[in-house]
Amino acid sequence: MLWRILFLSLCGLTGLSVYWYVWPVDVDISVVTERTIAREIVAPGVLKANRQVMITAKTAGFLSAVNVDRNDVVRKGDNLASLDSAELTHLLAAAEANRKAALSMIKGAGIERDRAVEALTFAKSDFSRQKQLLQKNTISSAAFDSTSNSLQMAEAVVLKAESAIEQARAHEEAAAAEVAAVSSRLAETAIRSPIDGVVISRSKSLGDLLPPGAELFEIVDPSTIIVSARFDESTINLVRPGQHAELLFTVTDGTPLEGKVLRIAREVDQETREYEAEISLGRLPQNWAIGQRATVKVTTESGRPGIAVPQKLVTRENGRLAVWLLRDRRARLARVELGYVNGAEIEIRKGLAMGDVILDPVGRYEWQAVRSRMSGP
Image (cartoon, rainbow, N blue to C red; front, side):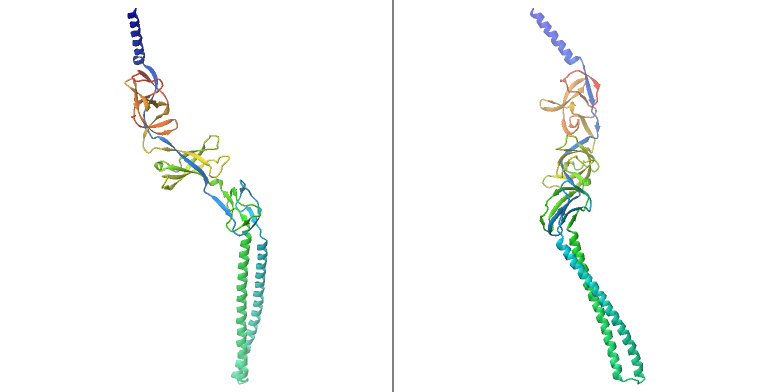
């Protein structure tokens, strides 16, 4: 009886051995090839704008009107707010009156000069006539001297009239400059937008007294919004302008936005050893805010060919990463060293060579007899 049990056990073990080690099973395989590997580099980013303007008060005054608020869309030249302008209006009226008076002085001085020129013309004619009479001994020297003195006085009057005109013109120029200065200050009481954009902040309220330089609004041009991402300096040879990028914001539904690398900064932070890259967005999130955080994933390519396999083919055996290889029609375990992860694929830095045949790891064991069949990644 015992020998029968032993015989049956031996037959069972033999059958299992034949099944385990002799009878081949069909296994999906992948053949290792070298190629340029796409890499996905992930970095944190912050939403910024290349055109962001702080609107300030150029002159002192009380805030008398506020025409826009946060999130309002504005156009270049729109009146955002106004300062009280009553005092400047009176100053402008006084400056314009001074200029008007100066213009009248110029006109009056011009009339006086014209009269002086006429008197000078008459004096010159009389002098010429008296000179001829003196040469004929018709008049005395005293009479001729009197005519000469009259000519000199007429010339002096003309010079004085021209000087008066110059003084009046100088006064008019000063008055015109005063008008321009007050007009400029008056124009500054109307605070206008220098760009097209969206108001993202408002710092003051109606009735506030504003000193020169006080901050009022901050405006962002949405067309210049980018994500500023910070990458480790080890990737600086991989990231280039024009590369595709995906941006995932922490407050969205999980759907990434499309973007591309716009430009790369030429400076590395000396403490973090990171450099900055600007990522342009194909479209903005529905609700965006300057300073909003995002995760940036840039797709790059390695500089030289390498080996990458589907992640599902990598397994962990005895605490170490490995893949199952086909060697002499049997499954053999090979330890591997991993590199970059790219979606469903992962780079193999050590442990594989071109032409190696990788097996599906499900159900594999050492020296298992296998029959290969091709599979996709």
